[in-house]
Image (tube, rainbow, N blue to C red; front, side, top):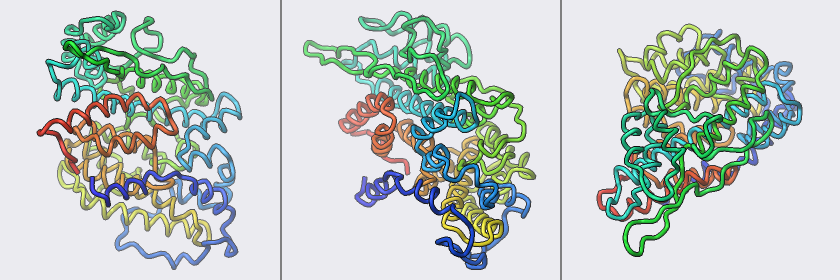
Length: 474
């Protein structure tokens, strides 16, 4: 990694201490005496109009530029923490208000999405270090077990079944082999159930409870001995342990969601579900503002679009463009059955400018919080384009948009779920360097993610000794 890249990453992952300050102080009002206030005309006009006035007005950034609409969020410790991407503080603040509420449900859903990406990171690293890059004469034969679990989470059910059948030796959990072998007989096969038999996988002993944090299983989850006379003991992560934390938070989110709104938990999770999971059909009602504020769905109609994009690709854009601001923003980048990543980059910048103008008009002037709100929207367009490209099978184009979104994921746009998803993607590409830096920063706030570092560090060491190691893709 070059020095300039390292500096860029350090800047991107810096503590978000200033984000609550922007939200807590700069949203105080919209009059001319507020720092940052100004004339709407002072904002650079976009080179073209991408979104209609109606779609601009439907976005949460523009709606929250109005003092009345913003009053329920401004100064609230839970929403201040959510805006600053501090999920732990948000959970504590919303949990103190009671066991049910949209803010609490959404926080648990975000944590469920984050731990899913941690499980994906661990699974990707494990399948490479003990699969693609396996050292058959050294690695413990028992590692076939964690390879099989990883393959189940990744949706490779037949491969999982074969790996589990090969898992023999001291320390292989018999209950785990039995559970995952039964799972692998079905498709999809990668969802750990919290009511599974004891020993099936490491999981919290706590019952899911809104406002609480589960006790993560101690790491390492397993230890095996390398082959040979002087074989050392190897620490091994069971990726299902992180997935179990995700399932725990998902259950807590459903319990916290107001009656009739559990589908919004699924909407939050949809872009982040693992390949081995069941994807429930969703029937969404009109989303309350709490499901949207500070998020990367800009309007209620963006939620069904983001649910559809990873599976339907470009078809999701054309289907939802009339109602979804994100789909409408991407429509000019569609060419046939593909999406042009370079055009998406330009369109994202334009949408940010349009929303800044819309906020200035709605709030009676330019305010300091307009810029971070617009930057979230800009990143939202890039991320939506990434999902569409993934759904269209444009792997490299999705990667271009992913990295561009990562480079702009600073401050309030620095979503830990997305950052961890980039680390998981890097691990899948056998590129542990950036993934290690990302997980190092995130594990400080969420220590359970340390479990994902074990296979990732092992992959780094293995590739450093291998002349055919995979370098950065981007």
